[in-house]
Image (cartoon, rainbow, N blue to C red):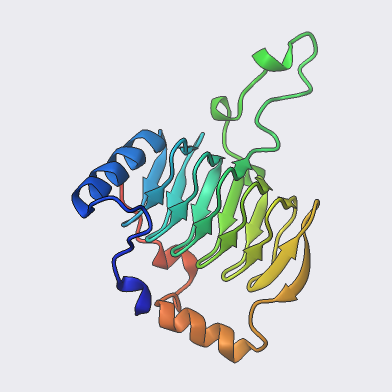
Length: 199
């Protein structure tokens, strides 16, 4: 594949670039996160999960992005800079006599389906977007910069806006979509192709 060539985007010598990548990855990943091979993170990235997050292989996450949800991120996903992937029910709002800052936090209760974000294989999330928990973004989708995703996005969709809505399709036919996933080695269901590994 063409994207197997080493990248010289940073301008750093390969040895220093490798050390910097390992350090950034180490600093970014917190508890309950299983990351696949070749995860690339920019400066200031924070990745944590109250109950469990699996990140696939060859995922790239831009600078100053925060991911604090349960769920999964598929192989080959590209997440732009300053993206927020966060819970919409992280603190209880119905506890009478208790301020929100002291209310029950998502990590102190059992997980619920609306605590998760599931992002498919080969998804591109544009910079400064917000993805709220309780949604699935299908394989091959593109989320435009600055979008706010509040509901599921079907596979191979192009979605933009606040709230994000589908404005087009990445490929014109099902055959092209299937061929694309097959060439990426993603013909198996997403959960089977993640190959999670601890950082």
